[in-house]
Image (tube, rainbow, N blue to C red; front, side):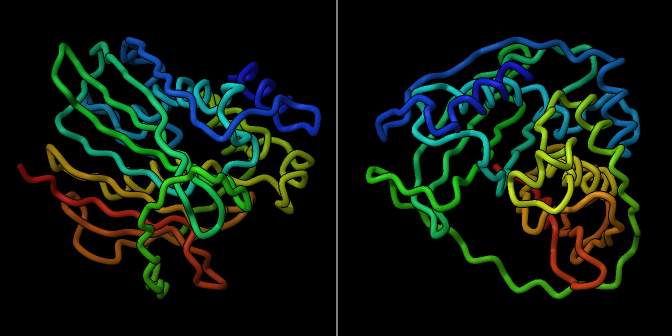
Length: 279
């Protein structure tokens, strides 16, 4: 991932490559085995129980390097560095197990109009022995960037969040950025270096969004065989900090909505929902 970030940083410089407004129609395919040792490292970071069924957050991690390769392509009209991961939707269609070999297909979609700029989506399909196991769409926002050919797209307004009574308190220290980077391969400097974080407008390093989302899903510990996992990223989590977690609707192991939020202001950091998929 480090060469990918270096290429993206060069593109973001004033003398970087300039492209047209169109998104290149490219895709990447790769087969990756689920290795027990690597997966165990991920589960220890996000607080997931170690079972034979693979956490969908780890499946996101497997596809992440391919996603970043596509977003950092010189012909993509928006700079990857500075893009904000604002949402994720993962449809888990069946379990993936340790030892499986996952066939991944990754491609970009967009650009799309957004009230705050322009978004690009990364779409992922994962199969095991030809059977579709997972669909994922990750949405990235380039704030303040407008492209003349961006397609219109509906963006549902975020419902007002009223902070509930927390059911757990999570103390998050800066080391969590390094631990998650090691487990996921996401070495974005805003999660690791205070100067880099300040360069992008943050007072100090911030936690990986997918770390918080994956840890929240681990806490819910869904037992549904097929389900949709929606994630909306709101206020970044500055490190160090202590955040609240609560299930706001439904119950553990089943369909539910849940949130990570700021204890003082009550504002949400991550809003998430697990819903049952039906034929």
